[in-house]
Image 1 (cartoon, protein in one colour):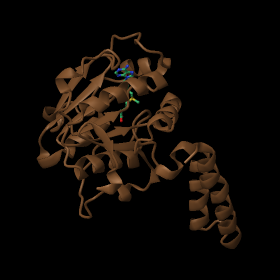
Image 2 (image 1 turned 180 degrees about the vertical axis):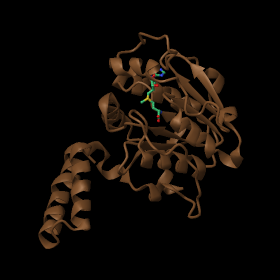
Image 3 (image 1 turned 90 degrees about the vertical axis):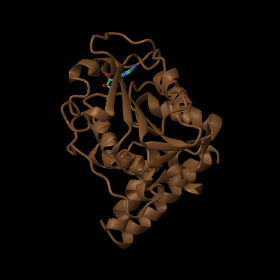
Image 4 (image 1 turned 60 degrees about the vertical axis):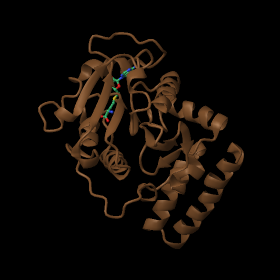
Length: 264
Ligand SMILES: C[S@@+](CC[C@H](N)C(=O)[O-])C[C@H]1O[C@@H](n2cnc3c(N)ncnc32)[C@H](O)[C@@H]1O
């Protein structure tokens, strides 16, 4: 569908439904729900027909997860995003995961808590603390975050530490070859420029096992990542889904090719 059609379908038409709801049930829950969907579609038109509830992505009705620590700090995933990432990891029976962008290690730990059978490995890559420059263009905050906290401090000295391996480097220069074709999932949340989103995604595509796995992006609607998605999806029309009320995007991969996780 062209972007103009998508914009029309998910903004203008949604707006009329919203307005109708608002007139009939002022400030009702359905009206607010419509408003939030219209707003989402208005600001993220490229995700209009790919926006899904977390429950549409999960396959197991009886899925149970554990996450800790739940409370988010600035620059972390939100509480619902943490639950979504952990849920997708557990639902897909992942036990080897690569994360780009460790920060304080809160999401790393939640991923480790939900590895299939309670075992496996989470590799988490961050710029080394001494970094003051990176190889591709990005905002200064991406580099400054490397020194804002002790990388991985929220998994250090926890029972999950043994399941986690911290690796260091600039994701645009890091040698991913030892990990290629070995991952069940990749979580991309490093530098947020369009150039880095493109480079990290290109590497993630190589990391997933041929038997299948998932790629997750954080901040998919924000910063340079959204510009990356607008262009990349226009070019490839890959089956990427955007999880409502989060900034997460998710795509399945099998035999080195993207596949539609909703058509399992
Ligand atoms: C937004 S934080 C990650 C948050 C974390 N995933 C969470 O859920 O709490 C981004 C992290 O990526 C790191 N980073 C930024 N640019 C990077 C790069 N080029 N290579 C590797 N890590 C990078 C930053 O140092 C920072 O720790």
